[in-house]
Length: 348
Image (cartoon, rainbow, N blue to C red):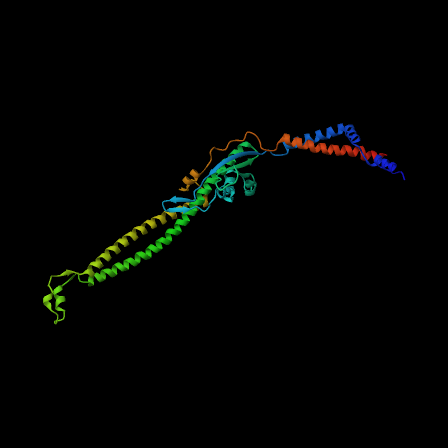
């Protein structure tokens, strides 16, 4: 058998050399160019008219909240321990809901989830324990709305932290001083009973001791000449009772002062809790006078206000046109090859 002849025949039918391939594509160059241009044009038109533009307004939030908050009622250990935990609260449900209302959106048309998806939190550098600077990007389909949404979001974020920390601290100190007040009341009543008992003992205890009467009570067999008879002397038991009464009165006065102070604190804290409940009912922040706002604003702040974006973030029309042109070119090459080799074989 002539093996070389068989191989040559196989090459003629089954193999396409590069020259033939390039020539086939060159013959279909018009088709390839037209399909590529149509795909690029269609992608560009689709990007302009069908895809909504996206604009980003950016917040650069600096966070450095201390571990504890000093108040007139004492130190309050804040519930969150890292700056990352504080920045993640910016997408909490209450903030999203208030932002939707302040932006004038309808809850039927704009959901909490859809607003949350338009917020992106980024760190400005590598993650570390001391990370305290964060970028928060807010997206919208027009630049003015993006800026407004960023500003409203940040305002609601600060209000939320103020309410949250105020409510937590108020509940903590209310519980603390209520327990302390009960303990003081018990101690106060105990000292009152002790004071009354000492008064009774003081009335029953002679103030002085008559030494002559004491000597008369001595046994007659004793040698009285050895004693010197003096006048009345102060009874040491009486003196000790007087000192106990004075100390008990001082303790009672101190307890009473503490009770009065704690009652004042509790009244103030109850007033703060009423303001918190009223805020949750009405949503009116102006009526809420949170003292924590000072520490929040001094430890969470913006180096600069958000600005109106000057250009859209997406879609990138030029990028989409290039991608569309490349995909169209690939499809055009496939069509050209099919036209050159598939249909010609069918014709033969």
